[in-house]
Image 1 (cartoon, rainbow, N blue to C red):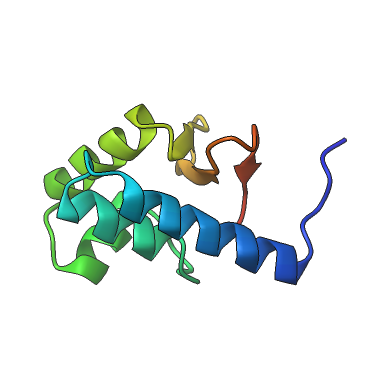
Image 2: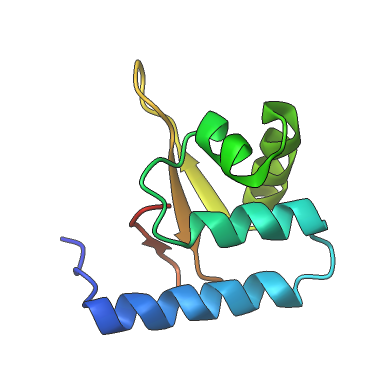
Length: 101
């Protein structure tokens, strides 16, 4: 059974994840912007909502999501008939940080 994160632990994990994004010199500025938005308290993390929040097109958001996933920063959980859940992946921790991402 998966351990639940305390609020303080979750905040530290999010801060670590944000730092991890900033250190990855292969990420585009758009990928970092999308990642930072996902790590905030966004109520709706659909591609359309992310695009609207950042003033970007849906296609411009889809590319950074793919890059974040390919670089190991993000895991996308596809749910049939429902929206996709985005899970931050702290490198070296071996688990995702489920939340509002």
